[in-house]
Image 1 (cartoon, rainbow, N blue to C red):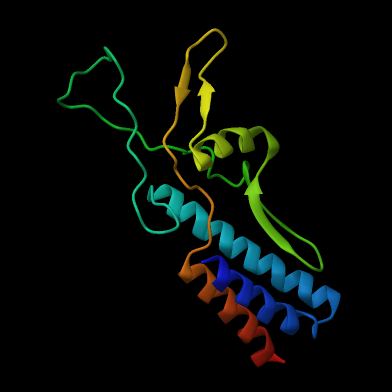
Image 2: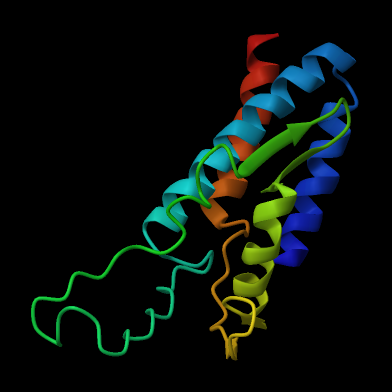
Length: 153
């Protein structure tokens, strides 16, 4: 996927160089918003960029309900909101990421790191759950947006 991303970046760079800075910023803003929306949908579907499902949460010990009738809540409900997941652009680049306070939580899950759930609590090792990543559909949507802007000119 990284090779494809490099090819897309090189191809898009030559096309974007032909645009005025204002047009470029507007186009990159639209692409960044679309990319963030796709990331949010994928996180809501609990899927990694490669299409595999996230590792499920561990069962809570001694919860209110036993094995039967247990309602499993989705992971990362607040993390995927526009408040915590940002899309930023400039005249030359775009980025989709998390705000600093949420980035710590996202990084722990993205790379499968260890963390304490609270002060004085034991260290817990989290499963690797890729939150951000570029899918083939995202790359195709970016290509389509770039081609679309030149068709309108």
